[in-house]
Image (cartoon, rainbow over all chains, first blue to last red; front, side, top):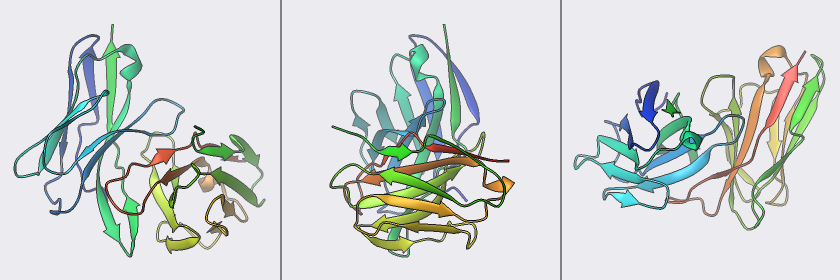
Length: 112
Length: 115
């Protein structure tokens, strides 16, 4: 089972900020939060990751709460091409490997 | 540089046939993952390699599924005696290092349809 909980779908107007929430209340102290997105018929694409501090890159910003039990991915100016399924993941270090559990994600619809 | 490539992109197999799916990871990437993605669902972990060592195969759904990465580079996922429930997109991903925080780079996937 996924260690994260996300809303199944969200809408956003083009040009506005898209704020995608994720709950990860059982996250361990050394687990990172990763965000990926998957545009239709493509493989998932890495967006951003963080441990404790807020992070920003050319694609998005990641806000992690102080208790690390939840986070928000922010796309500052959503475009139609940002329509995709967004996955919030915490890494599960198991049996010496890195099993990555995706969950169902949030389907973001950016509307003109 | 080149990303992760997978071949074939599409495969149609008759039930009972064996199939082999290939993944070419990014050069120098230590870690390689295979995932299975059913229609409308998120990718599900199948197996993980660190170089040529298969360190985690807990996600392989049955003993009909077999993966290898003999030289620590190219990997092959083999499915024997395919069944209709094997129809899915099979995704391969690689990452530079086996420890966090390194992102995974995904290939476009192979869409397998078992008829």
